[in-house]
Image (cartoon, rainbow, N blue to C red; front, side, top):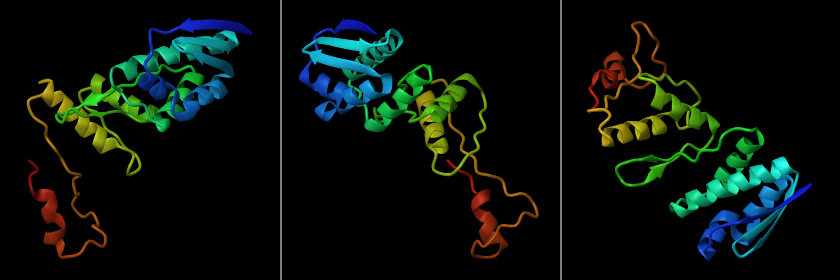
Length: 187
């Protein structure tokens, strides 16, 4: 068991609440996740536990505080995902994608992080998965971000193609009404 006292640069009440949550719920969660004991007195933190776990906790606290000082709000869901990734020994990066509204969109889990990384590293990315998992949302956020940064000149939207002879199921209308939406250009 090691005991390390971490001296943080002066921390405001707002930063403290963002870092530890209401009634220190994030602090208690961090204690459970890393099997450490955290005692805070002003800007001083005393963290007790196995040296490896204490190191992980300190590293995470510094990263979170850095994000908080940039004005980022960290949700309970994001904290759970962060703890999971740190426990698995994975890198924690709270990546944000800026869009024209000056709002930021961020991947919410490891799969979305990987998807964003693939978009950044590759010319073309094909993504297949269940509906509602954020594929189109993140792709459009990245496209708008690239447009904003002038990495691309335009964004071209495409729809799934309807192959000849493919059954169009129970869509209402005749064949023309079923196919017409796929033949219209998107702007």
